[in-house]
Structures are given as structure tokens and as C-alpha cells.
Image (cartoon, rainbow, N blue to C red; front, top):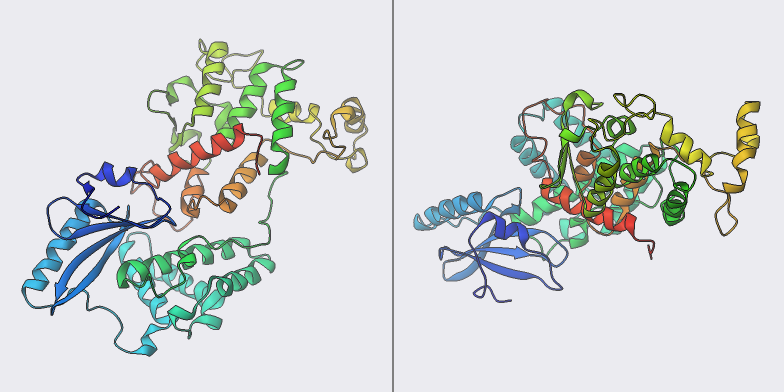
Length: 435
């Protein structure tokens, strides 16, 4: 599409643009020269086309949504003022080849990032980020020209960190590296000089640490069939609770305590108040089409109660924290009998051992309700959908210790990406074809 066939006029218009099979240029209304580049790999980049000294040039003005349409327009006005004074607004690149190193750009990115997040980045945090980058990739790659840094080199170094058991550090190095290269492309217009694969998350080969017994994602189709069969002998509401837990991957206690007043089904959002959250911060869950369908089925059963999942014997209290765990046990998701130490548990195992194997004869793994968070997190991080780690962690309601409390809107953080992510996840769970 040529840049004179489609004109951007509103913020919503920018939000709705999707990548195609090629890079696309879009013209911003007003005749200012401002353009939006939508890369086929994903990402929306503001660019200003202008002439200086009889040469056609392009100035990078940032990436959407970090830079809004209004901010890009304001930056365009400033650049035009510089041009009127005979100054090239794009004259910001390093002036010698030594300054084209990865280390140089890493330092520039760190300074930019610390200024942009001054409220939440202390000097100590800034030092920790630099040390993490230095030990992770800069010792080996820092002196290389930015154009010579390949994704394979970065991945290998991050995998070395992962192999030592430093899973969280490896993930943060990967995230920082992606942001660094996004900054280089945005601020220095070097998209033709860098390995653009580094604009995507760097995925490591080794698996992340599993904190709770989690279902293998490849066995999810079998589990969903078991869940459907469970209603023949078990309580339907329990099966629906497990299904909604998978679709929303909230904590078990947050699901069991859910109240109807927290749900805005018209706007497809579940707002959990701070007092019910582990981190004591309000949390919003975008509701996929699949989640909405489950909620409507639940409403037919418990819509006349305050709670979605009331106890069977005490309807003014939530279902027991052991209800879903016991249902999964009865479905066969428990350890081998020889792994148990209590005779009663072993006897219970024998009662349900006929359910302990998959249709192909494999022994089922042990899985618990909280493990669905691990399953969802791993799948989203490793998917080819390019979901940012920060968006995934925000949807998991994970909060970094160094973030300032209460100074921003939690719903606003990566909201559009989280909505898209939850819709993708809902469709993924619903489908039994994961090829």
C-alpha cells in the first residue's frame, strides 16, 4: 500500500492497524510528512520524511504505543522548527565508528530508559540493569559493531545464564536486549543495519523452572476431554471452575472468591479488587469469547448467589481450596502409588488408578490447579505470537519489587496487547489441534 492511499487521523485507527505480509507505510493526516511504518514482523514505528541540503531523509520518532499519535505530531512540530533554523533534526548518530559498538548503544539505551522511567528507576536499579547486561552479553559482544551482532550470538549467551539456573535473570536479559534493539531502530533509524530478528523476544532452549506441578501443554486436549467427562459423575460447577481457571490463569483463591459484581460482561472484563489479590493491587482480566461462554454457563447455576463458586454446603462461602484439586486427582492427575507415603493416599490412588493413563497408555503427570498459571506462562512466552514478556507478567499479576506502588493505572498497562493475548489463549485452549 502506498503512503497516499490511507490516512491516519485517530489514535484508534493506529491501534487497529495489523501487520501484513510486507512492510506498510501510512500517511498521517495534516500534510506534515509524518508517517507510520507497520513492519511485517510486527511493530509500528513513527517516521518523519523531510529534505535537508537537497537530500531526502527519514527521522525516527519512536514506536507506538510508547509514543502516541499526539506525541509523534508534537515531535514533528519540533523537528520542523529545527529545519526552519537550518538544523538537521536527524543529526544524532554517532560520529565515529568506535561509537557504533553494541556497548555504546547499550549505554545510550540505559540512559534513555532511566530518564523515561525516572519515577520507578533508582540509581541502584540502573546499576543492576547495567551489571546484568554486562555479565550477560556485553563482556562477549560489547565491542562488536551493532551491525555484526546476530541473534544466535545473543541467544547462546542467554542460554548460558539459563543453564546455570538463573532463569529470571536470563528472561530479564532477553527482555532488556529486545528493548535495546527497539531503541536503536527507533532513535537511530538503523533498521537496515541490525539483525531485525532481535526486535523479537529472544527465546532460550532450556525450559523455565516449574514451581508447581503443571500439566504438559501437549496433554491439554486430553485433559479437556477428561474435564468434559468429569461432569458425568462429578459436580458441573467444579468442572466449570477448572475451565475458567485455565482460560484466565488467575490464582485459585482469586477464582474461588469471584463475585458477580466484579464482572462487566458487556465490556468483557473481570475486575478483581485489591483486597482479594495476593499482591494487594487491583487486577483486570480481559475475558475471551471462550471465558464469556463459560461464565454464562456458570450464571445459569449460581447467578442468584453473590459468589460464582459457592460452597455446596455453605453458599455464602466460596468452594473449598481442595475442591478443584480433588477433582483433578479423581481424573487421574496424581503421582504414582510408590511416590506416596500415606497408606490412605495409596488406597485412594488404587480407587482411581483406572483414570491414571492417557489413551495412548502414558502415565498422566501430577497436576494441580495452580499449575495452570505455569502452563499458560510458558506457552505464551514460547509462542510465535510475539507477546511481550512484560504484558504476560502483568496479566499474571506479577509485580517487580522495584516498582512504585499505586502511581499508575494497572488496567492501562499493555491493555490492548493483553486483550489480544487472552483472545489468542482462549482459542488455543478451545482447540485440540496444536500442530
